[in-house]
Length: 181
Image 1 (cartoon, rainbow, N blue to C red):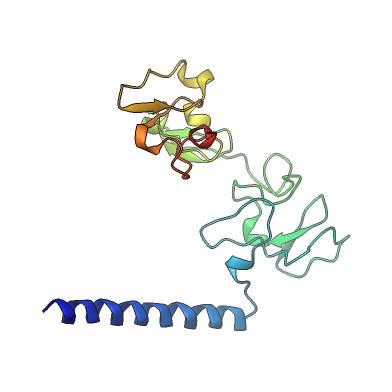
Image 2 (cartoon, rainbow, N blue to C red):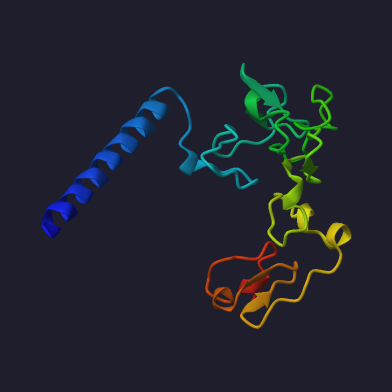
C-alpha cells in the first residue's frame, strides 16, 4: 500500500510540474516576461514583474503602448501605476508624485500603512509586521514593545520570535536583526 501511495504522489508532482512548465511556456510565447528573470531593483515578488526588461534604463519618451514612463525614465506596465507600491526608482508612478493617482484611503475598520496599504486595524501593534514598511509596528505608533518571555528572542524592531529562530539562516524579524550573528 505504501508504494502505491508514493507512486501516486510522484505522479501528481510530475503532472503539476508539466502544467507549470506549459503555462510558463505559453506566457513567454505571448511576450510576457518570466518572473524569474525580473531584474527590478524593487524586489517584486509573487510573480510580479515591472516589465522593464533586462538592463532597462531611461527611455526618454520611448515607452511602448500599455506602459507608464517614470519620471526617472524607465518604463513599467500601466497596471503598476497607482497600485500603492512604487515601481519607479523615483516613485513617480504613485501618489502624490503621479497626479493621475488618487490619495490612498482605507475603510474605517482598517489601518493605513505609511506605504499606503490597508490592513485590519487589529493588526496594528500586534507584534507581527503586516505592512511592507513595518509602520504597523513602529515605536512611534505602538510605543515600547513588551519584553519577550524566556523562550523568545526580541528583535531590534520589537517583535518576539522563538529562540530557535535566532541565527538559523532564515530572516524572521522585520529588520533582519535575528540573522546579524
